[in-house]
Amino acid sequence: MSAALIDRRTFIRSTFAAAAALAVSARAAAPAAAARPLRLGGPSFAKSDDPVELARWHRAAGYRAAYCPKVEIADAGRIRAVEAAFGEADVVIAEVGRWCNLLDPDPEKRKKNIATVTEGLALADAVGARCCVDIAGSFNPDIWYGPHPDNFTPRFFDAAVENARAIIDAAKPRRAKFCYEMMGWTMPESADRYLAMIKAVDRPAFGVHLDPCNLISSPEKFYNNTDVLNACFDKLAPWIVSCHAKDLAWEVEMNVHFKEVRPGLGKIDYGTYLRRLAALPDPPPLMLEHLKGEEEYATAAKHIRETGQALGLTFERGA
Image (cartoon, rainbow, N blue to C red; front, side, top):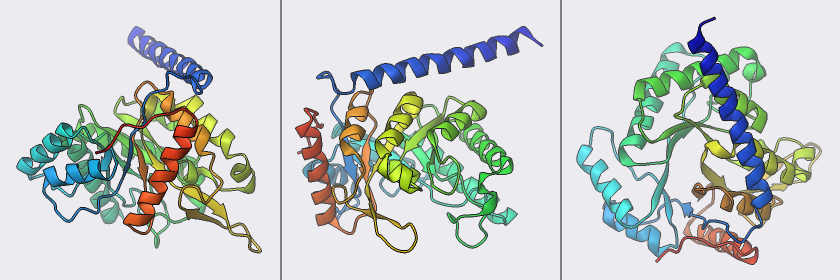
C-alpha cells in the first residue's frame, strides 16, 4: 500500500473526526446568544425578469435568499447580471434545482438527465449559487421520484455515488456544491446514509441539502423529529449548504399518511431547527417551498421569523 494512499485515508479520517467534533460543539452552543443571523428565502412572485428588479423584490418581501432566477448556461451576459444584482442586494442565491431522475431505468433518459444536472451545477457555479440540487433518483420506471424495492440496495448506493462523482468531475465547480436532497423512500434517507455517501463520493464539491420533512417516514420519526433534526446537525453540519422549510401534519386514516403543510400547522420542531441553523459558522439559506401562493408564503415567513425571534434569534433584514 502506497504512502500516498495511507496519507489520504488518514486525512479523510481526521477530517471526519474534526467535523464530528465541530458538530457536537455546535449542538452545545445552539441556544447561545452568539447565534448568527439567519437567511430566509422563497420563490419569487415578481412581475419582472430583470435581475435588479428580482433582487429588489426579494428584499421588499423580507427575503435575503432566493432560488436561482431563470437563466440559461449559454447566456453569459444574463448570468453576470444576475450575480451582480443579487450580490449588490446581498441576497444569496441558495440553489439551482434540477429535478429529474438520475437513475432512470431507460439508459437514454438517464444519460440526458445526468447531462441536465451537470449543466445545472455549472450554472450554479457561474451564477454564484450555493448549490445545485436533485434527488439521487429512483429505479421506478413510471414516476421519476417514486418508490421502488431496489432503492435501498447496494446497487442504488453505488450508482448514486458514481453519478455524483461524474457530475462533479464534469462540471468542475470552483465554489458551488452538488447535493442530493434527502428522501423518505430513496437514499439518502437518513443522516447516517448521507454521511456514508459523503465518504464514498469523496469530492470536496459534494455537499448536503437538508430537508428534514423528507426524512419523516414513520410514526416514530414523526413524534421524535427533534432527534432526527439533531442527528442531521450532529453528523452533517459541516457540509450543509442549503435547506428547505415546510412542515408535516399526520392525517389520520387506516394507514399512515403524512401531509406537507405550511410551517406552523404541523409538528416539525422549528425551535430546534432554527437554533441549530443559527449555531453554524455560516448559516445556510432556509428556503420556503411547496406552498400555494404569495400570501401563504408571507404567512409562513412570518411564523418562522416569530418562532426564531421568540428564541432570541435574528434574521438578516429585508427591505
